[in-house]
Length: 500
RNA sequence: GGCGCUAUCGUCUAGAGGCCUAGGACGGGUGGUUCUCAGCCAUCAAACCGGGGUUCGAAUCCCCGUAGCGCUGCCA
Image (cartoon, rainbow, N blue to C red):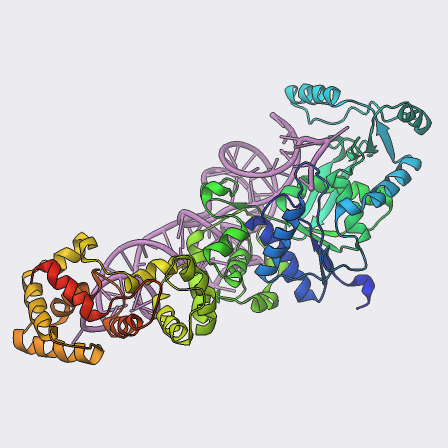
């Protein structure tokens, strides 16, 4: 394969805030396609909207994309042979080709005012027509236009589009799509403030950057004919298009803050794994050929297939994302879990700034057992409260009921009595004692263990006691910011609480 | 309003005319795992938008309707 037909795709966000999962999905699909085909992935920043674009947003964008695990071969931060990669730095290019179109008579200056245009638009809408530009300035000569410009008048530049005919293209996910030229009208390519219009800038950039496949959201389908017309006017090769369906919220409206976390940044802060998010995002409109669904980024690259992308909109399902995250969590080595969990535990005030080896070792084991069934890292501190908190006064109804049952009081009295003089406690002692109580009272199983669980944890449910007891005992000897109470201390408190 | 796109379990989807008694996954229900919760395992319920064609045969192709979404900017 020579460089001429090497696949080149791009992700071209505008830096107007944090990156949304819908856009992240588009970025991912482009990246997967490029990586699988041995192509080039380009990052281009579309910052021509002076009103909304902000320099710092570009940093967020890059940070989010990198966090997701996507990398680009060319972009504003890494350079490349087709730069610059910020539209604001390509203004000269847009003007150059606009001039060419003007001189060839394929574009013209339009002096119509915004008010004038708005009036026509309303009129068209009222009559049920497609609001198409009237063509008022279409036949102004370039000389006259330049005279008026020199005299201080402002003008936008419009592309001269054939009045009738059909524009069609073969969309990789949608098949043949066609539009009637009568409904298109002459689009503005350069605004009167000198900035390029979106539909113009993308074409110049995609063409100059040798983009072969334009993979983007479905909301661009209606822009595509105008862009194709531009390619044709410039005599350039039209790329292949693939339009991805929209991502919706639970109520089938566009995904927004109302629906919960929607930005990549939010998911990262919630403690969702990047790989799980990519895995989930890949299922929005695509499905793997075999049944296996828990897939690494690398596996995704191998399996991805644009021809398997579905055409209908997908609703973002947090439950499935969490499930996938749990699956990816399980696959992580213990050290990695500790590394990722630590900030959340520190934030919650459970762990100090630099935990020593003993604490790290203990935390690693605790995380290993507590992370079962946890959706995301931000839920972990709550789980840790099982170890760090013990307050009989805060027991819920269920726990109280268990501990106050007739047989429970019997078990507890016996257990408390046997542990009264103990200086230390561990699981072996616990197991020995419960054996004795079982023999002495005949109480066993749930009746025996459940009250003891409540006595030791002040909760009705939690870790298996053979895991819980060693963790609490060892944890109580470590110097955490929030002291962990040992079992004997807990028993003393529960004894006082129950008045036994 | 116009134009475009879409339409399979609650959700993501498989399905490219007979392999469909419509498959999988999430979520839900039930049972098991002899301390709980979780996890895990097993199991159940759950869908082809409606109407016409085409065909020996349609979830799959065509038309109409309906619904949803997108676009309809000198935003991107």
